[in-house]
Image (cartoon, rainbow, N blue to C red; front, side):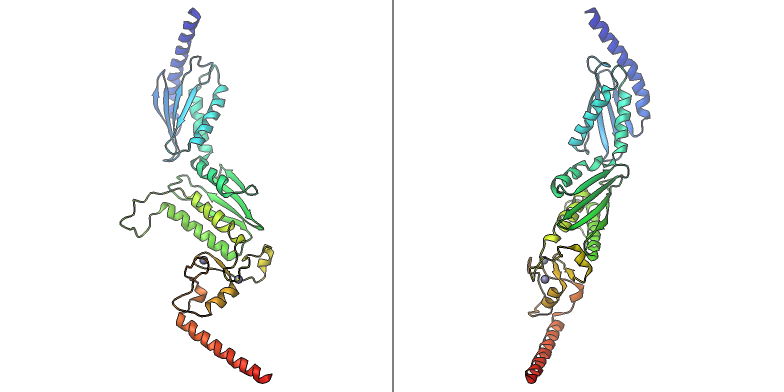
Length: 334
Ligand SMILES: [Zn+2]
Ligand SMILES: [Zn+2]
């Protein structure tokens, strides 16, 4: 009994000495606030940005410091899975400190982790991309030092590499994304790049014209919508698509054939057409009010065919007349 109580006294003395150090040193750690430091528990908040924030609760176990400090983490913004992972890393770290004061070291450790892993704010989105957008032959690399996500993905013989830059105040500020390499037709890349910038912008900027019934605008995370667009809706999609008119595959199976003049047009609804197929379709009656995509019945807008139905009709009639004339000539010659 005497041994046990002197052990308890020793523990209490050790903790009290450590608390003095905690009160002095924890407030000196950047972005760190000491909320409570008593024998029962220590509470600290580390806040790097509105979204990079952790609450830490430490408890001294019965055999402290010969047992590791109990560290619990909570956050309103960081993903639960990430916190669980960080908690197990913390546990491994405290085990290295048995017999010594552990609190200040732990706070420094967690603080450094947040500084060195800026992508922790988007851990859930990264998990989503890995699980739902990429296939085993694709590749994702996290560059924590530069706060970038590098993605390489493919469909058949086509590929795209992108770099996603995650700003410090993400998700309040949107990502920037760059298509660094690809073997698609260049006009498609330009189109996809512009659209992805627009998708990211709309995540954080309220619409210019607000409808009265719209709920208040809340900025949202932009990595997932941009990656869904570039991976699922662009690169994984188009190599499998056919021309809605002739039903032949729209992108050649061999991308090097794109160097030759394979005319492809992308229209308003997003479908790709062979230039020759679309040109014939647009210049053939009925002209009516407008022309529609055969697949989704959406109106086809394209600057190359921005001619009124009336002009189209005249041109067509003219061409018919020419053809008739030609036929007559041919008939005459036969
Ligand atoms: Zn076609
Ligand atoms: Zn369409």
